[in-house]
Image (cartoon, rainbow, N blue to C red; front, top):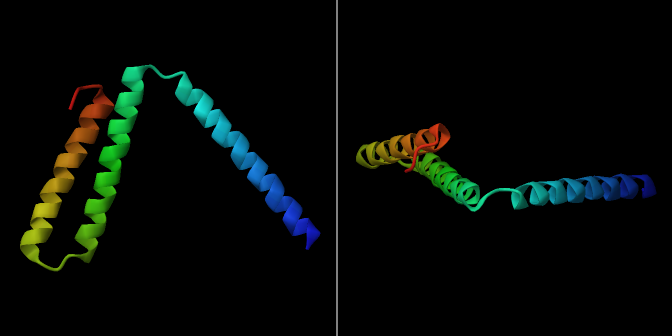
Length: 86
């Protein structure tokens, strides 16, 4: 039992170190890079929500609306990846 606890402790230490490394990398980003990263995260979150809504929807009209929304979000992500402004 103690062995399992130790491995969990080591795992949490590794995760903490990775978290610190990610934070350190974030602090080196320019304000514009941070803005773009936040925008991309927001769009990806919206995209996930739309995909969940599509999976749960049964009304064909609503599904069509959600699919158009998904297409719009995909276009915005493509523009961000290409370096263009949204």
